[in-house]
Image (cartoon, rainbow, N blue to C red; front, top):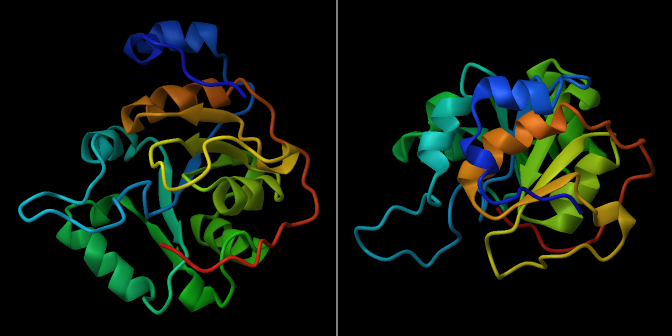
Length: 205
């Protein structure tokens, strides 16, 4: 499974363009919420639940990519999730917020990813999914032919794929590595679409 090498995040734009030519452009980025952008509780008083690096990284990505959020929720819909993002100061970055409560199907079902892609106005081969859950985020998006970035940050979820369907295109361990990962992905082809995977697991953010 490809991953970022130490020091690659410091490369200049010109160096990145020369190293990773844009054979497969990325125009949109879909992100998971829980343990990808926001740490799943409990939270310490006075401490932001935002995962380190999220704020500054979204600032870098905003304007270059169309950004969307795709999250499994028990009851919260788009309005509630958008309000939560606004309170944390990152809501303005997302033009699309899609929840399983609104769509009626949780990740990894294809319907929730298709709803997000339709709202972004982009096809799977020009959109990347970023998330912490291999079975839900990676396998679900990969089934539609999307490139994926596994954010291996939380010890609450498996760090390594159980099979080829869960194998991400790239993996990162620090959110600030995401811009470099997106540059690298533009040199990598999309996976072939396949039958969707449904784990039957409980919903999570």
